[in-house]
Image (cartoon, rainbow, N blue to C red; front, side, top):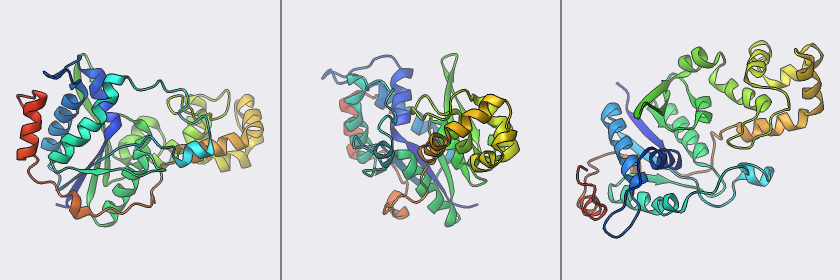
Length: 283
C-alpha cells in the first residue's frame, strides 16, 4: 500500500460549510458555523482516507497571475459575506492549533498549489486525494490522484469520487480535456469567457472529435454547427486566453516539504482549548 496525502481546498470547503449550516455563534458573538462545518467534513474524510499527510491550501486576497492577464477574471463573484470573512482567520488559527499544514502563495490560487503538490506526491509514489467543491479540479484526476467533491442532497452530504476513469465516464472527455471544454464553453463561476454560442453539449462534441482547441481550429471550416465554426474563427484569441485561465498550474514555485505535512494526532492541548472557546462540544 502506498502512502497518501489528503489535500483540502480551504476556501471551497469553508464556503460550502458556511452555506450548509445554520448561523452559529459562541458566547463572544463570534460566528462559527463555517469553521464547525469545515472540521466535521475534514474529520469525516480523514476517517475514510486515513492519510499519512494532510495540507490545506487557501487563496490569498492579492491578485493572481490570472487577474493580471484578464482584469475581469472572477469579476462576477459576489463579495464574501462578513460573517464568513471573519471565519477565514479563525479556521487558520484552528488548523494551526491542530498542527495541520497550511499552504498559501501570492500570485497563485489554491487550485495551483493543490495541483502542484498532488503532482509532487504522485512523482514520489504517494497517492493524493483532493477535497474540493470545485469541479475545475477534475482536470487533475489520474489513476493516483482522486478528486472528492461533496454534494448536499436532501440535507445530507454525499461525496462524489473521481479518478481519471470516472471523469471520462461522467463527462465523456479525459481530465486534461476538461480544460479544452472550458476554453470553448467558458465558465460563469470564474468569468472565463470561452466563445459565444458554444454550450457544454457542442463543446463536448467538438473536443471528442478534435481532442484539443488547437486541432479544432486547424479544422475550423469543418466544425458543426456553422455558428461554432464562425465563432471559433472570430474569437480564437479569446478561446486561447480562456484555455490559459482554465489551466491549473502544476509547477507553482512553492517550497513544500512533505514531512512538514505529516498527519499525526490533531487533538492537541491548543486545539482542545480553542474548541472549548468556540463551544464545539462534540469535537
